[in-house]
Length: 127
Image (cartoon, rainbow, N blue to C red; front, top):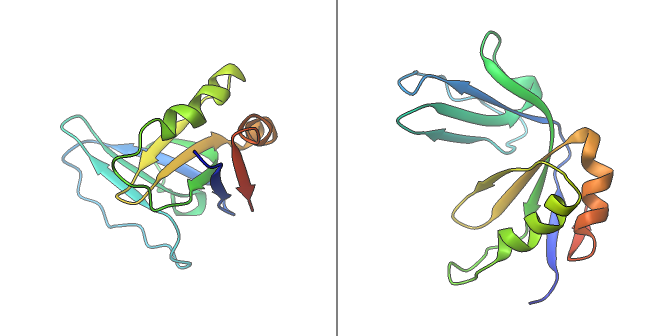
């Protein structure tokens, strides 16, 4: 497999949690950036830029976001494993997301340099 290309998105991101039956106004990013909304039986989770996080809800802030450049074919195997293994060895926690075309890795901003070092052996990092 060729080296994967990861693009580091420029903002700080956060994730917040609401009850599964919550009705939300979809957060609008004036720059048209990354927003992910996932609803399950247990919860509603939203990932967005930090400045779009609502007040008074359970949330985690301070993430940087890597995009795996794609699109990635559905027949490919081991993409996330190849990225998560060196991060696990470096003891870096990861929050992952997937879309139809590709995968995203959320890393705490304080661990960014370590993550870039760990991922640099298997991926090209673009800023």
